[in-house]
Length: 464
Image (cartoon, rainbow, N blue to C red):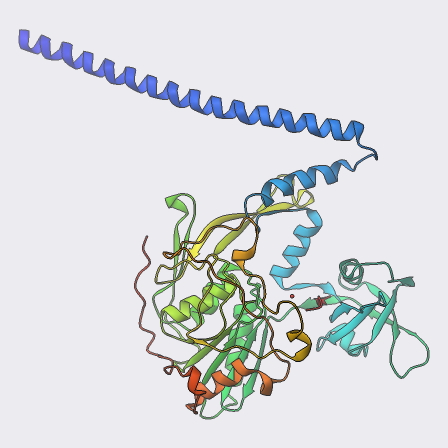
């Protein structure tokens, strides 16, 4: 009986000690959190003091909204080059880009240097602009009677876009016509096709310009159409040069289009619960045919996910020059109150190729390096190389074992296919033709064998 009493007593003492330790720990944690919050509130008070001082004493009355926008942007920009505040207008523009469709006219435009007017680069087929007869090199001088001179390209594009079924009148100056003339166009839904595909003899060439919501579907549609028209198909060239990236899910879908199994990409966030792995599903739209992927200094982000996945699985041969090296994922987080408050674009994860390598600040190294010769007018410039992720101020540091970050490479691609050294090299490789002695490479492997499991710009052109 005494033993039972002693046992009960010591059990009580032990539980009391545990309870006391837990209380101390909780108090410590609470104190730590309270202390941290107290420091934050002090800093916020400091910010409030500075804001009021600027509003009260600055030489000109400042715009309050601009001050807050700039403060938020400054905070996010201090994190890395890809985190930013999107005010309501920029948020809407970003949504247009990712959706790949908007209400507009259907022309690609740029700002004519020196004149301050908008120049038509190209009307898009089957759009209101094409049906109205607009032509390449037309100059747009007025919109609904108001002159364009003095507007930026972005402002002019904003005016040309608008609700579907609303009219706008463009004043056009065209070479060969003595007088300007007006063209009335009714806006319609314009879809930006990120895919341009064609037959290069017995090879399918696919140019992927961005990764928007339409990319995967348009790629499958284009490939299916061309496969029916080409006899003795030798293979595919997937051109990702100058592609700045876009939606992560579209990069995964495009990679999956050419893979039957295995990992595509691994994303790692701050916590273990934010680690995700995307895997390929059965089905290869290329039917196991050889693939060449073209990259250069302008291939970034989603482009690098596709190139890295196909390279690691030995499903494609990567040709060109080192890619940009953006190995981070940004999440668009709408702010409270709806679209009128905008959103923040926040870097939330790093991504890794199927073999577990990070390309952050390093880029994808091609299997075969093929430099494109620059025309004389570009050779005379101080630098023909694009800046890389590693050259951006405040970029996330890479995870290279040797500590060396990647440098930029050229983003130049000739308009004429016959002058495109990287494309011509890829075509020769797929056809089994002799390659330049200094740049020989093994033929691409097409068995789709899975890679090891992961361990854990020129004048601005705007469509409107």
